[in-house]
Image 1: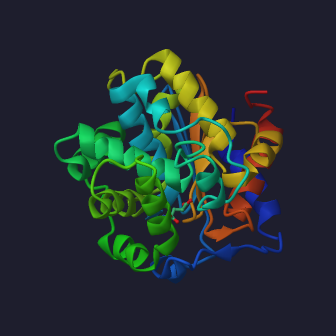
Image 2: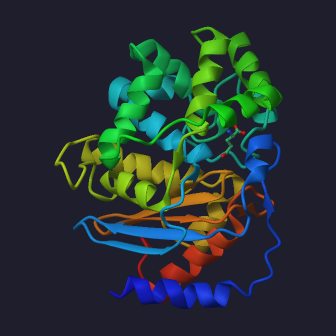
Length: 304
Ligand code: GLU
């Protein structure tokens, strides 16, 4: 399939779209990004790559990083992870406190902030040097050793992360955080601050399209069954309280972040990453979502 041609066709229609989205500015460092950038990259499991626009430009992956930390925790503690969090869509914003109080400190799923914070707590208990090991995990998945945390972004979020601190304190009060709050939050903010390009993200997510095995190295990251389950979680919980819309319009499992990135996979075929910093009201990339909707429509490829 000529993905390249499809990309430019879709983009030429999309660029006339009056973009109503807004760049995330509740984390001050994120507000400095040029909002008009747009990139996309598709990597296939048989090692082809198709790029368009700012596909090589690194951006703040934010909540997309929650997939890496979840996979690391899930591969280690296996189904015990479900003693600490649930696996249901939230139906509330990503940083909501209301549901958490109601559910007695058990987050609805690993991809909302509260769930990802518990995942960080688990990784601190399980790993010797979580911050270094998470980065080396990403390095080995991407075969790229210069992917890094951005300390300015992490620090900016730490200064303004009052809701995230409220979430962690609430969970600590229910006994669902075992380690000290500062270490858990430092790790959480570091993971959100990782910077990657669309190409790097799409290549890194390929193992989820390949039954848990990294195509270039043959390394198994997750069992086929846990890969299927991770993909199911991305489909149902990967897009804040817009996961239903994303399934309906795009029809691929994936994860978005408030940096404007979205990664999605088609099992046994490809991983695609798109980046456009302006977000819709639910926190998903406005143009990114429109692009992917048109992409799965034109290619007639989705999981449905
Ligand atoms: N670091 C962001 C936060 O905790 C992540 C939000 C996101 O990308 O969903 O608010």
